[in-house]
Amino acid sequence: MSAPVSAAGTSNRPVIIGAALTLLVLVLLVGGLAWRLRLQLRAEVLRRESEALYAVASLAISSSPAASRAESFEEAGAVAFTAALESSKLRGVMALQLFEPGGRLRQSLPDLGPLADEARWWREPPEAPAARFHPAAELERLFGAEMEPGARPTVAPLLEAVVPLRANRPGAPSLGFARYWLDGADIAAEFARMDGRLVSLAVPAFCGAAAAVLLVLFWSLRRIAAQSADLARANAELNFAAKTGALGAISAHLIHGIRNPLAGLEGFVTDPALNAPGGAPGEALNAAVETTRRLRGLVQEVAAVLRDEGEAAADHPVPVTEVLEKLLQRTAPAAAAAGITLEHFVPPDLVLPSRSANLTGLVLANLIHNAIEASPDRSRVTVGAQREKDAIVFRVEDRGAGLPPEVRAALFEPVASGKPRGTGVGLAISRRLARHAGGDISLAHTGPDGTSFRVTVPSWQGPVPA
Image (tube, rainbow, N blue to C red; front, side):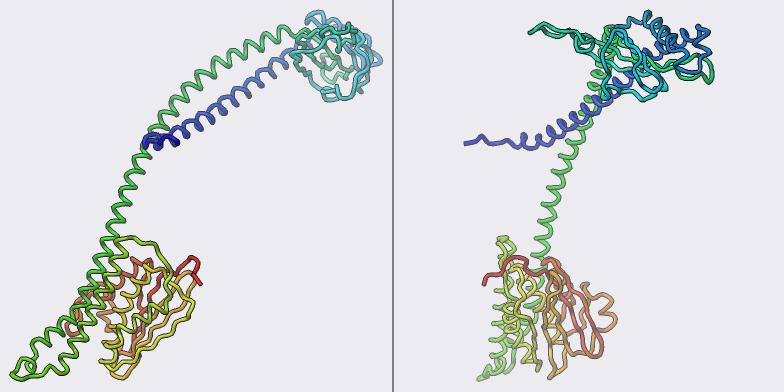
């Protein structure tokens, strides 16, 4: 069984990972810059050595009248080789080769054998001196010496330089070029000193930069962690506010819905015919019974929605036809009493999440009751639904005279109602319920031929059981 991970360790893990990645990037950056500087410094040292050889060889050629006046290698080849030998005395040269301007090997001291094409690392003909360093050259292989069986080769640092040979005067022709093999011990020691200086500079620079970056990083990550905690608390508070706001809207819907039925019950209780000696309840009793049924259905409907909101139960698919059938059953008595015919058209494949279905039922119930009250006798109220992308759009249409301008100006805001015993908050409550379901409500049309409202809610996105 694994040991539990503490909350502190979990919260510090991103900080540790971030610090490690930052240090890795910093190591690569400082190391890359130091390596590039190392290569540049070594190139400068090699250029210095090759130019020194070039200066000595050019001076030796210029000091010879025959070589300084020569116009070709054939005229001054021997002088050029002598000049190369003179320069080699000053630089500790171990081997020397003389090449014609075309690149053919002319003389070698000592004899190093034929030169392979892949060994020609310089540009031909070389226009400027160049050099390269061999930190561990095998001398026996270079000079063609035989080794005893089982003997280990002699390894030493060597400097290889290629120097063009020409007189030190403007327009002087090339007299070929010389290839030097020099003892590279001094160069190796100088490279080692430069590497030491680079390390002594790079390490403090890295440590200082790492300390500064880590301080800033830890401070930033701590701030981010604190802000993340604040954001989590704010999200929790927003979720709580949204839930309480939805509960308030549902409660307001309940109060709005039972206001008129309660007035009907009050009328039944205070009916003079019922209270007169020998009076019979008659139609008043039937109205009271129907009102009581409406109240019970409304309370049960709202209680189911409140239960789903409080328990945060998992969603399941609910067919839209089922939602509308229940809705029309509840509104049919009110429609019949007002002489209104209820019509509906819904495709059979439309499905809603259960939570959205409950809230949508409350919104549509309010719109249908408003449509019944706004419609003239012997007219129709139509309820329809259709799919639009990932949403389901409901339409509730009446055949009334349309909404007056003052109502349209503040359509979904609590206002003074123009209907008898109206509260003026029905549409405002309906919009809050629709938005809590993830959708919205809008006015699609209003005019002398009637009014149409549009309710949009997200459809069910999961698989639908067969």
